[in-house]
Image 1 (cartoon, rainbow, N blue to C red):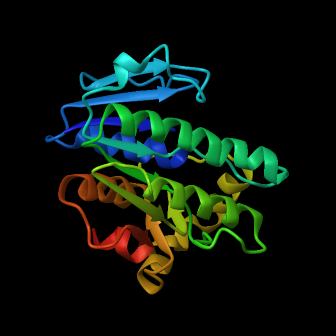
Image 2 (image 1 turned 60 degrees about the horizontal axis):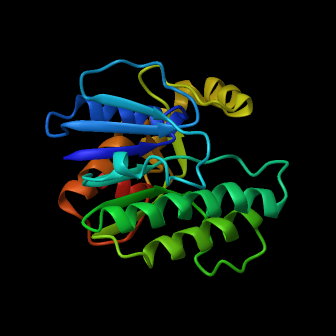
Image 3 (image 1 turned 120 degrees about the vertical axis):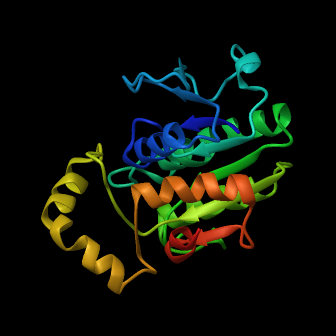
Length: 219
């Protein structure tokens, strides 16, 4: 399986990239991003591309892939809905529409979030925008598309969030997260299980198109 990965420098993306490089059945990983990961691996190719709203100059590099793992995202804190929608909806659909045209046999896996509003009309801004994004992705002509809605994500293997407040939170709660995960499997997963689950649904499919933390851990 050959894989495209967006958002590989973020906490989730780092975990997904690690699992892709470890998986013996994944032959090639192409990372597209605005900055390099700094990693080196025989499977890994990176393409720095600043304008994620226009892929016309690199379309030839984006063909022949079996799956796309889209882990790119930002926190909505301090952002207007217009700005958050530009990053969350516009960029994601720019990528997905391009890939659906170039790779109709592709499986597209999108990392959303627990609490996403599928009606896209609720009061919570980020949940509305994420819901609209999910709905648009599910309507594209991919072989399959899956929306991942993790709750709390425990970073493993030295992976850290790029968001300072999250790093502080993980530092404070880190010692008890494994216990909380056993007690509340509906709400907590980790970067390793998240990465493996994305690979799993791309390879074998899943009965649901929207996966919560419990589904992610089960896969």
